[in-house]
Image (cartoon, rainbow, N blue to C red; front, side):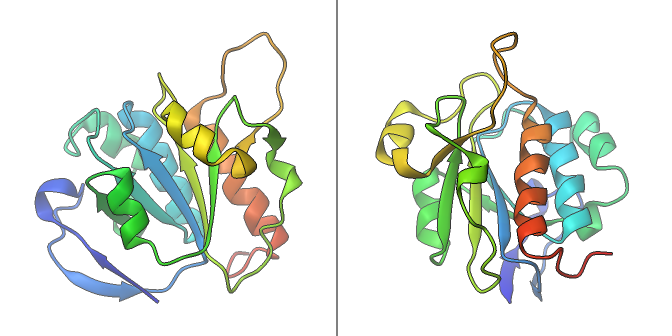
Length: 180
């Protein structure tokens, strides 16, 4: 059980209530996302998989942005969103679990880890679309800094595609709980 606070000025649905939700123990954490359509697509993935979306400020867009709302379609009421003012605030607010940092500079492929313990929270932390995660974060967490293998023809994969790959790999290992 997770308690979420939604603040009207920060939430696409202008929800102003505190309530409890149940979810699978998988979290998508976006550090200072810049592109509203990516965040909206990730929100839709979170709604479809019952995972929790964490947004770390500052955001590079308004939560009133039409591209954000369009990408999330009419699923916003099913998205569990938690806002954090900084990466430090995120770590203070999260209650243990295993943290994985996604970067093209990660030393280990995402398939190197097990995400199958349904009693543990797994946090997949993604950086900004243009700059990634801060270098000091990558250096501090080298052992859990992951990458998705790809060739040298492109600089990076799309953020929403990358998030979906990780979420569905964790769900696959957990036997797709509550999904059909």
